[in-house]
Image 1 (cartoon, helix red, strand yellow):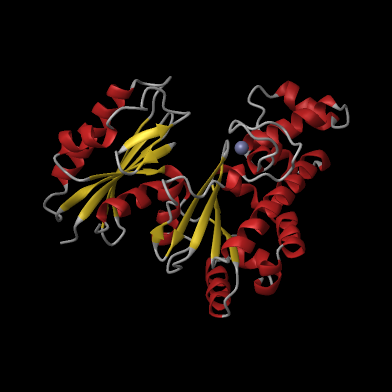
Image 2: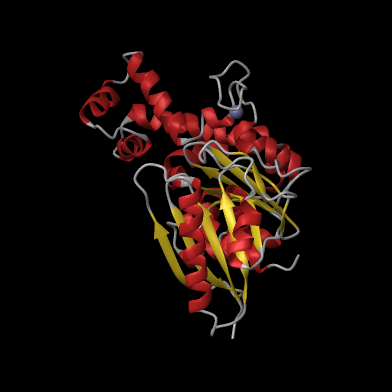
Length: 347
Ligand SMILES: [Zn+2]
């Protein structure tokens, strides 16, 4: 009977909880959506009820090892509290881990959401079997997690992996972090919308202006749809996006020389329209990448070319010690698997 743990993905609007065995089999997944942001105590009630329900439901399966919770924010690993979270108002300075452990009577691990996503992809996703890797999550902003020797690299106090706040344009747009011209301002969903709005304001992108005025939900997805339909203005935005993502990754590859960078998050699915300029920049700017690039990086990173082919390209490349840049495989479940893995791993 396999032991199991519970992974929690605590988003700003969604709460998702899954029971996962030590072998990586998902037993059950529960999702709570919400209109508006429910209060902290309500979320903790909902979470603890669901964890207690799942842990008792599957106790015949094996031993319940504890719960891992992925949180959007900076987690203080010593105190089990949130140091800073833009999406969870009212959670800072509250003993999150202690309170949940008290209610569950089980071990609870808190971890940054990008870090658990990295661990999930490393355990069961695109980087399965790769000990040294990083995940870069392209969503509204950019998240990042680094795994070294199969374990999350926290840095001194849990703040490592902030790929999104590397400066790539000294005089670029202001960023929420207080700096200017961060990677997040060029290679995220909000950056795509900003670049589209700028193109519209310049009067040089009539097709985007038309789409923006007729589409109430005009956003990164609409701009991507235009790009794949061949709209030149939309395509240019994604080329810029790929270029800046490549500049950021070139720096990270030069510094870390990791085996694999996995690109995840909602915007990563626009791979076809940004990956070519991303790989161009990598070759031009990273001496480490130029020396270790696979012969056909787009093919080794693309899932559309067929699973067998993709897997063999990755395996072959790994044997030759290549730097692989590829797409995430687990989607939004990466965080659930990674959080469960955290809880299931021995200290
Ligand atoms: Zn920033």
